[in-house]
Amino acid sequence: AEVKALVMDLVNAVARCWEALPLPPHTGGYFSRTLAGKLPGKFAVEDDILHIRGNAAEREKMKNALEDLLPTVLSKQLQVDDGRLRSMIIGKDGVNIKRLRQNTSVDVHVGKDPDTTVRIAGSTADVELVYSRLKAFIQEHRQITKELRLLPHAGRFMWRRLKTIGCEAEAFLRMPREGENLVEIHGNQRQVDHAEELLGEA
Image (cartoon, rainbow, N blue to C red; front, side, top):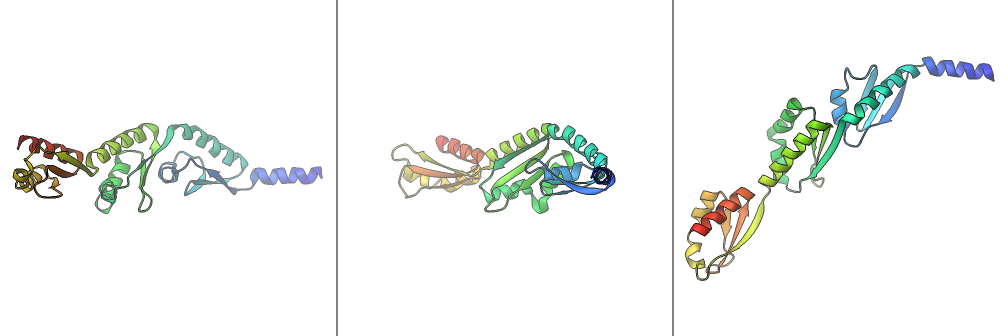
């Protein structure tokens, strides 16, 4: 029995086999691009699983290297329920995502309906930077609708000017019923604010 145990220990020590290690959620894409040269051995990344290959000592060395890397990695996400905004974040043929990957360490994944999540993974500093920029971009370009109450008896006069003001502000304006003193403004925050300013000057 002791001899058999010694043989098994020897086999386990020298046998080169695969071992699966879980990665933090949504970081598989980032690790698949950045682990080359950082892990001292053969490996493969599938979804959020890292597969390492080697004998016991080699696998232990890779595990230790991974443990050193994990504290430097962060994953964050944003909910973007506007399909137009998601398309703007991706860019034509994915050009914006490719540019982010080239200029930073991050991996950005934009969900498709019904998944409305934008996931960002990478080094902590780069993730925080990209997250803040995407959040500001979303806030700036998110489509909103605002109702504005006009002065009494101004509705009939303003109805004739809505198209001109809408063109100048790059927003969509409409009055639910002609002659009423209520205007609906639709656009992003900058467009709505500009239209409201122009209506106040009219």
